[in-house]
Image (cartoon, rainbow, N blue to C red):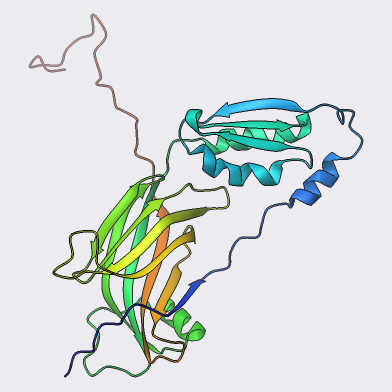
Length: 270
């Protein structure tokens, strides 16, 4: 059986999240309307500076802006990883708890990666590794390809803010930087790149297939499809899933020490 040629760099890309995206939080306009009710603080803005210890202040801007009132502003001071917020007391009552909840120690996460070939006609040799049935059924209902074969897979344990580079199988490599996990269970993969590994390329480089910044929701697989065209009979697909890892236990069991004057058991042991 002749081997299919590898896919050239894609001229067509699709991306989908397989489960529903969580509903957006309360809109800024609605919160402003509730705040503008009859409070007596309309004249004065307060200044609050918060220096983040665990997370990039620049990424917290996305969290803070929807919580500002119409007159509120937020300024980034990168040298101190600090946000300076000017707003009413009512708005600061929303913003400060949100900042404190956001600035927690980095979460431990696992990113599961599947490199999948999708095709219209079944191949003569059954695939060595198939997709989970629920995932294959879901893809068949959403996409034009009927058959899927897993080419490579990897599970990467990481945490918020870390940079990763990894070869998946023998043919593909990828790299990205983990962003911050937001309260809606969403996280960004910054500078996500996937490339085809070649024998002449140095580690961490190769023929590029995709470069993008991706949004993932915890436990909701995201599928990226790369094909020559929308009518192509085959495609390369990347399935990404992110999940939270349990926090390591920090409890320690102290040895039992007999009280002074307590009787020892026979043999002199404790």
